[in-house]
Image 1 (cartoon, rainbow, N blue to C red):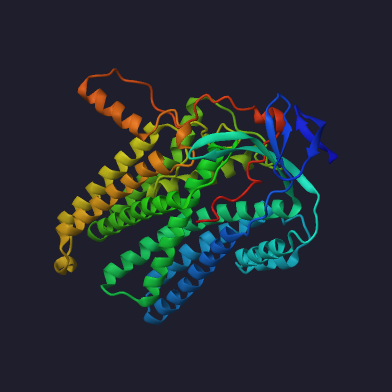
Image 2: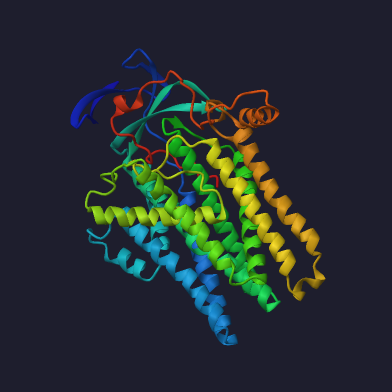
Length: 480
């Protein structure tokens, strides 16, 4: 048994604390008498999420390029121009994001930067991640840091806090995973979403389906669903950062059904409405964009808060403002098509509201449901003759029912499949019971249910470990 001295940051000072290295599964005594399970090394997991995101990026890019060639040969310059735009804009943002996360501008890596200029950054990054994974474990590595978390079982916190040593290889893979999480969301909601909307609209207007267009639409839908899935999992990880969260396959299945039905119904409603009232879809889209873009800023000004510091060390106030504007733009684009799973708090260093409320979720889905119904009814009233061979009333009912099913799967996820559901102060059942009782006049209005853990007696992890290692643990989106 050996003693390692590890520098921890506490209150701006570097403190040397002794860590006892024990065999895996051994038990040691914590600082406050708590039992701490010390694990020598965290298992390095394969970067499947990195590989999946790179495959989606390349598949959508190649398929869009082939479709643009077909549009060019057929003389469809408008469809070709819009398709190119919805491919290049997210691709450029993806290259910038990967370069920014890996901080390559100040390093001598000409090949990597050249690949980014060719818009092939995700491909070379994926190869790097696979090489790091293949080399990991061949020889013992000194650990970079130690992180401590509590386990969750069936939604309850169980056992004592456990510690993991994070090695160099695992830390590098964590950086790759975190970078590709961001790029997956950018690709999904700044590229795949408008691309799917455009291609569906073009198919209806031209009254025929190209095989390449259908393939691109399917890939785009998969990319959007995956991006929404990443948003949901990241929201859980950020909120329950003190716990080792593992999302079960049943929860992933429930989220896929929830997100897939929600996004499909929303896009179908917008496209059908645009085919009947083409120019009116522009104010509808802009209204949604402005509402969700300015909502975080209005809350920021109402709180009279100041700009968060240290988002990036080299950023000035102008640079911080530009970054916040880009974040709110992405947040608005996500909420136009589906629930973002988080609320922004521009005054917080993490930019995320740590205590999301059920009322935000209820207001969003209530508003979105009635908006979709109105759009479908307007399309039904002003539809063209193209739908003479389609049972229009049945299609209207199907769209409304599908969105209702999306909401149902969302409620099922939070009630039965959420990995930390037992930590909720109020769950779905409590909120629904409260609403029903208020309508009957049996109860007085209560305070809004908060999606936060109950006051559990668990150790203060921040004082024991200093800075939190939020994104240095496992990637729970591997199963996605």
